Length: 128
Image (tube, rainbow, N blue to C red; front, side, top):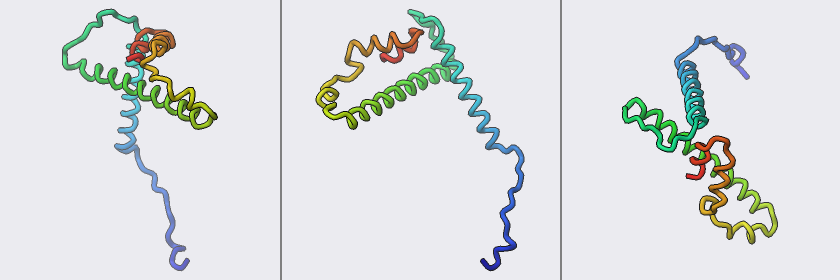
């Protein structure tokens, strides 16, 4: 190509920027959130939990609610993908699999979630 010999792409080294700081901060916040949720779920189940009404506890309760919703979504999505794949690939599977009621309507679904997890807290969250 004519005139392109003089143009070269040169990588200019850049310093540690604000985007890098934001990514490191978000990663640290994500790790802190995982540790907080894991510590809460691995603790003993309280029959009457202590609920703090101060505003500083609101982000913590929001985090627990978000974690519970994300776990429920991931479990639901995984079950749907496996169930749908089995329905599509197995001949005659629709005769057996379509009439089945939803998992949460079955008494076995509650027992499954309660017995799968070693700590009762995730099991109770899974049945909800």
